[in-house]
Length: 47
Image 1 (cartoon, rainbow, N blue to C red):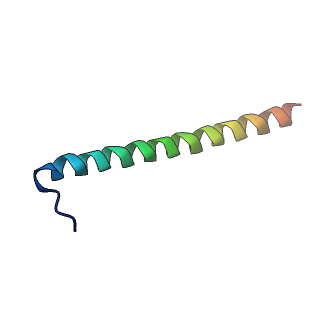
Image 2 (cartoon, helix red, strand yellow):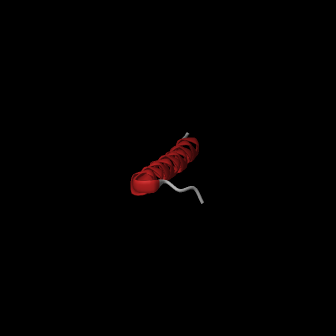
């Protein structure tokens, strides 16, 4: 493993924040897609 020295905590925190933000963006995209599909199906059903 790479020796990060005294900056290890900062680097790992940055990786964690970055991964959390990426996961949040992916979750938001999937949720928005599901909402759009439901709205489209409802629109198609009602004409």
